[in-house]
Length: 252
Image (tube, rainbow, N blue to C red; front, side, top):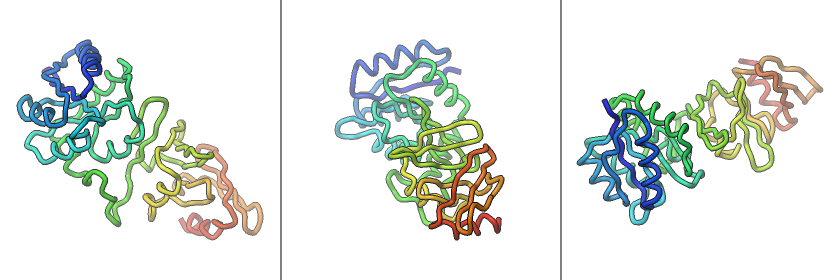
């Protein structure tokens, strides 16, 4: 079966380019285009697309408002954000987007996204949006952050927290380290610490937040200084201010 796609963007040239790229892929049919949020909602109700490629910056009704309205409707398609702005990735994923593509979109990146949509059943798409909180609402108390958005080049990745070894700040940037890869976080270290409170993550330095489940070795440097060796061989020093927190790791 062909995958039915709807393109939503207020720029005609952007719609044209995206249509050409989609039509170059196998088993996908562009069933419509919309130049505004309200037009998009009408097309979704009429065409019942499998996937909506949605721009965020549109007059009158922006992309997030469209998602909010889609969630209230009968037909809920998979949502892929296509935008020139990278600062909304976290909100987009939390709102239920399947992927977040930056313009200009590379053909191979678009193909990967469409393949991801194919693997997502209609029921899973509905459940995904139904489980997620209202756009822009704070995470409820007691609800733990399970996935973190990381960026590598122009691509965004949803990382499970259990695969993350550490977060390390370097100037204004925060890096996410896994077993073999390094990603750029789109939140500050303080924001990540707040959202990962009461989980396996422990702040050990003003510049470092570590997953205690991936600590391989703890070495004493002095009475108040410790050296952590992670399972990926990274070494991090525990600051004097955070020395008391090392007991949390030792008890584990």
